[in-house]
Image (cartoon, rainbow, N blue to C red; front, side, top):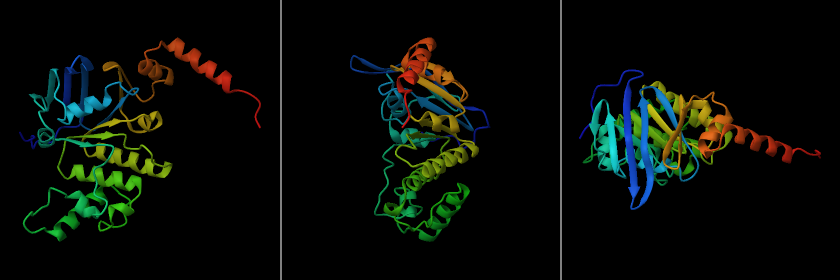
Length: 269
């Protein structure tokens, strides 16, 4: 199964999940999930550990198959029966481990497994294409011949995202793209996510960092115990988001927050 060559229009729904559930034996990891992702928007998936975020991403990446429900892509129902199917359809995933080869340079990592000429590598063409893409993304990488081992965390994330763009996807999923990054590297990756969105792609990010989520997300989808727990705009209050994530009422969240503030107040030294 290959993906349509027609680029989606801005705001068009690319991906739509309807009643998607996933069971592992008697354990329900996902229950009746509803999710839409449109072209040119960033959707953040948030929730506590065990909320179902990683399972949902793996369903969309073709790693797990849903027990029930339907997945529609570009307006037609699809079956994501393996990772190759998802990738050919136009769903690219950058997992947290990035899957980069540190002993290879940037060009080799970008084209690993997808060399332009497997029989005789067209090094010049690959290098030009790599530079062109990285310039379009305003990537801060000193040289495409730089070994990945010498790059910063933000630069490595950039290489991983650029590699997925070479496959011309319509949706990119990013699992904790700013985890363990410093302030400057985090800003670099968040800017990159905005540029990917501006290319007309749908972007799904998983993140525990609400500040990063608010910086780039157009919508925030909260999962709790494998179920939808609310959809919010980035200007939603912390009380609203925490209530959706934890299942507590907003009043309880407010009281807990106030009590916490009282507990930490005290003489300053």
